[in-house]
Length: 356
Image 1 (cartoon, helix red, strand yellow):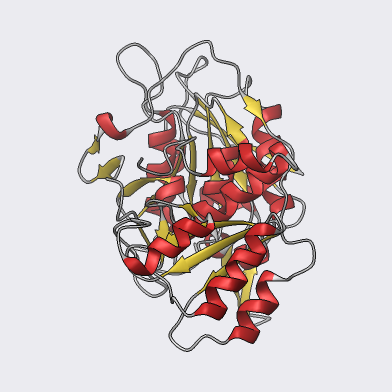
Image 2 (cartoon, rainbow, N blue to C red):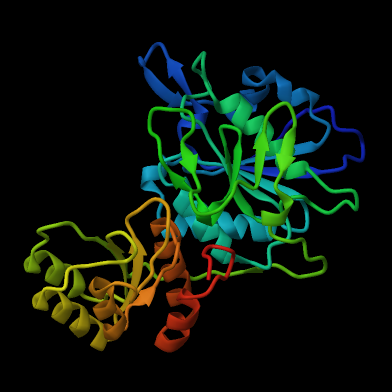
């Protein structure tokens, strides 16, 4: 890993020190005229690309991962690597900014929120829709504002945002509540079921009642195990028994995130319910989340979801699919074969990821 100390306007004893973890993604791409393609830029030239950084009055250190990744190539081991870096540097820095590709940023933010238990420092993920080398790039504003949010403290000196969050296009969102909604507009992320933690305009307005409270003197507990034996099964009209059976009978499967219709509804045809029951009887946990962007699962309210309740499916309330699958991996890694404990914690908020 490469470590770069940025030359900012920080005094000898700055009020905040930030570790930036650069994982790759669109943010750090520039156009190579010789190759006629986008290539990763050398982060030691970041002040040439964003000279405004030199005016910031807090200390910034950049850690560049050995292997820069398009976020489509992110896997659970990468989430664990980022979590471990934060744990090892937790006492050295006041906050952390993770530069990440947008495509799977919500998955990484959700995973980090579960892995970093009792977090009391900001971990802000951001990136860009256009590369830093593009004339109209959104990378500059996203990065600078993410840094300012990471450094922000209240009147007592406590960090304003002691949780994992995503900053993008003027909005700060809880990491495990965010979803990518746009591939071609700058407002890439949304959080339909939870208010923004902050909105950045001329000033940054913090929505303090919705931000996780700061708890001093609580030690960080960074978890080191994720179990990836989870699958997302999205229902659609006409889905065949062969498809459902092939998914539910996957060897080694431990958990299913079932994306249902509306408020948690699913077909009531006998073959479908029978396959779900057989999987549940084998010890496969099935978590019911809605395909809708907003709203929540109300399992048992309608006849079409009452059967799911009887089979033993777990209501995912207003969990996003990204939070659901990463929470599943986290709990399976934490509790192993203790199915009842996993079932209990899937249904309750651990890091503010769902509303009871």
